[in-house]
Length: 322
Ligand SMILES: Cc1cc2nc3c(=O)[nH]c(=O)nc-3n(C[C@H](O)[C@H](O)[C@H](O)COP(=O)(O)OP(=O)(O)OC[C@H]3O[C@@H](n4cnc5c(N)ncnc54)[C@H](O)[C@@H]3O)c2cc1C
Ligand code: FES
Image (cartoon, rainbow, N blue to C red; front, side):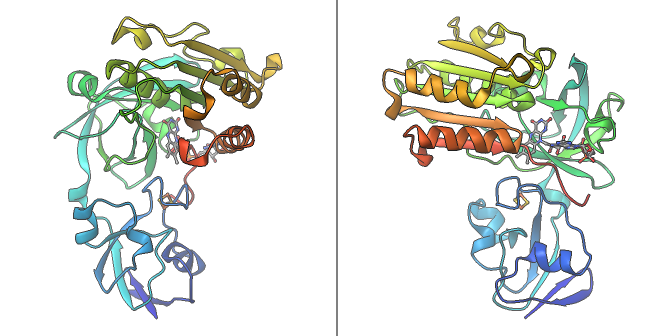
């Protein structure tokens, strides 16, 4: 079997993903999660069948146009592939930015056409030179229509995207990928406890989910836990942020912060909050942030008796290659 990309053909080994065969031949595609979640590795089949596995979870229109995820795709026939076409990205303008802490930046982007998303989902942002990174959306669709789409970025000074956005001029153009991810509020059980725990900027999409739930009439307890290494990295403060109650006038049932340097462990805190719930088995959990913390929180909840099906998680893994 042959995979053709950029005019060159590469032999595919049985069971090898498109991402891996290209990497084996020194062709670096951007990738972060390697698990079908972030869509950083989206490609398009120009000829041949990329296989079902690579198209799982993609919208029907994308599948019909031959799009697939290179980290999952294991073609069983010869296939010719190309980068995603520019028309699936939405051009956007940098409206404004604000420092929320020494190393956290909020940016607002105005897409040139509406981007339909659910609070808590993520999109890829692409610079004009092709550098691509996934980011979770920090506001609700109605707020994005009014103010632009908001993102909270941890600034890495050498970061190709975060470091660049920290100094980019207002009016800079980027493009926004298709919203994706399962971290969003599901109406249907308005009394279920919601346990939302995030480290660093992982709290931003969780706050959006909590506000969306409250605005949708959710009546069950909403518990938010924010973790960071140092107290000054708890960039939303130690009290429940005001915008958490703005939608409904109701504060979350609980807002808890954990700073590792104070000996507070977010994993233990999350497990403790879960065990203290009156109806733990009805709980839905949402976890976001650094991959290590998310993995440990998920494991702790599972060990405490929670079904993995009731846990949605986004791991903020760095992008390899570009
Ligand atoms: C689904 C998903 C959602 C995400 N959502 C967000 C979000 O809402 N907010 C957010 O801030 N980030 C988020 N990320 C991470 C984001 O995509 C980038 O990886 C991050 O902003 C770094 O990109 P960069 O271009 O600035 O740095 P890069 O150019 O990729 O890296 C430059 C240097 O920064 C350092 N660095 C970068 N990432 C890390 C890391 N994770 N840990 C330690 N050092 C690192 C390394 O020294 C690296 O060499 C998300 C990731 C995923 C997969
Ligand atoms: S979807 Fe392929 S690397 Fe994330």
